[in-house]
Length: 242
Image (cartoon, rainbow, N blue to C red; front, side, top):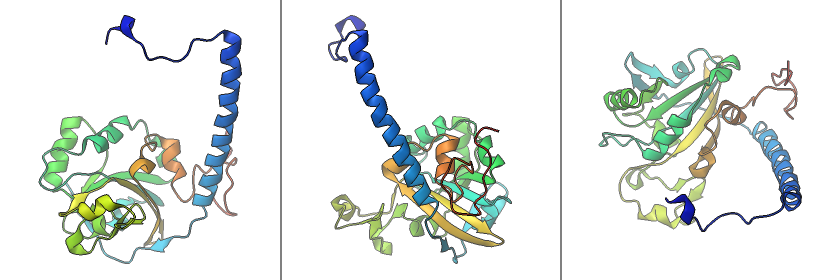
C-alpha cells in the first residue's frame, strides 16, 4: 500500500482534544478491566464435573490417560487444535494461536500444565509441529471420545447437537454440518489425587485472547493465584508484587 495514498485514518486533532478523548476512553478501559476481574471471580466459583470416562491419548512415547497429561501438575489447560485426520496441515487459526504463544513458565510455577490435543494421528501432528518449530506437548485423541465429549468435533452421525453452548436450533450453521467437523476451543481441568474434574471450556472468540500466561491462568480454577483477586477462601494466593 502506498502510504501517501492512505485515505482512511483517525481524525486529526489538537493535543488537548486528543487528551480529552483519551481520558474518556481510559474511563471505559478501567471499567472494562473491573468487569473482566468480576468475570474472572465468577469463573473461579464455577462448579466442576468429575471426568469418569477413560480417554486414551498418544504421543511419541505411547499411550496416556487424561490423568497422565497433567504430568504431576494440579491444573491442566488443553488447547483443542483443529486438525482433521485427513489433513496434512493444521487449521490456520489454531496455528496462529500457537505461533503467538510466548513464555509460559509462569504456568509451571503455578502448578499448571499446557498441552495441545487434536484428533488427527500423532504422526501428522509431530510432522506439523516440526514444520512450525514448536515444542509444546501435543497429543492425538484419535480413537477415543475426548473431542466429541468436549464439543470440539461436531458429528451429527454421533448425535452432536450443540457447540459453544448453543444448539443447532440456536446456531443454524450447525444444522448444515453433514460430516465430522473440527471446531476450536480451550478447556481447563483440575486434578484431586487421581481424580480429574472438568472446570471450564471456551470456544470460538472466547479463545482469541488466550495467547499469554496471565489470560491462560485466568481460565484455570485457581486463577493467577495473586492476592488482588477475589477468590474463594482457601484458594492459593501470593503477593501480586513480591
